[in-house]
Image (cartoon, rainbow, N blue to C red; front, side, top):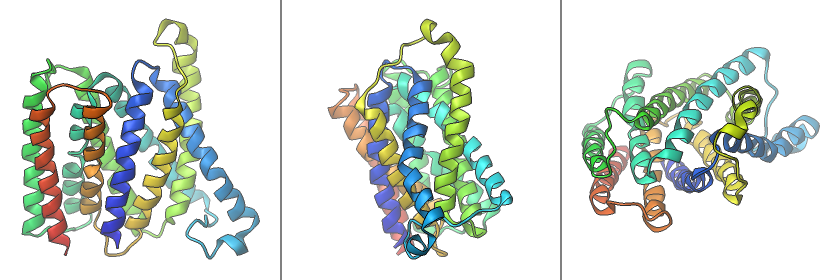
Length: 300
């Protein structure tokens, strides 16, 4: 069941990435991210209010948010800082890079998550799963070659560095999620409160870094896709945390499967954004998909 949920989360995440690219093209990054955190918090607000004022009704549902002590809030605040760091890097990179380049690079995040899972959680992979990881690494190398055809030098492009940093911090976040779920933190408590803390942090960042200089930078333009970023992210994260709540779930596999979202975003890059060199990058994407198949076979 947890693997099925991981694939559903991947589908939702792919739509989220597509909405994010549509919202960020030629737009100011920081206010888009601020609105993302605002809408996410507003979507979750009814759940926390119902859990507080109608606990008898909510306690038997999968949406119930149990009370949390100060220690729990501190751990969740740390998660918010990690995730927001990853998002800031990813949003800036998504704005300046083709989605058919950025999305597959982000798809390599499970490789780092795997290394962490092996080191910190004692997860062991079988032959099929190792084959899937190796194929994903090869796909990443081939993607760097495809990027050169568009004049993107992986060694000297600052936006490539940003998407790599987003991938690293994203892997740290995935490991931290598994730690929280393994130590009894309720999935809805984490999902709801980390969204609210991100709104607080982004409000401060916006007022300090963007608002005073807003007239000298890229102007902000409202787009409907900004709201849908939040909607599909909340749905993807809900399913993701639900998958991790299963005792048998493996963060290395869940994280890898989630990155199959690249199929959706890659297709959007080809059809909606009309990006270049689709054929050569499609081969890299095919390798990623083959890697996912091996991971699936390894969990049967």
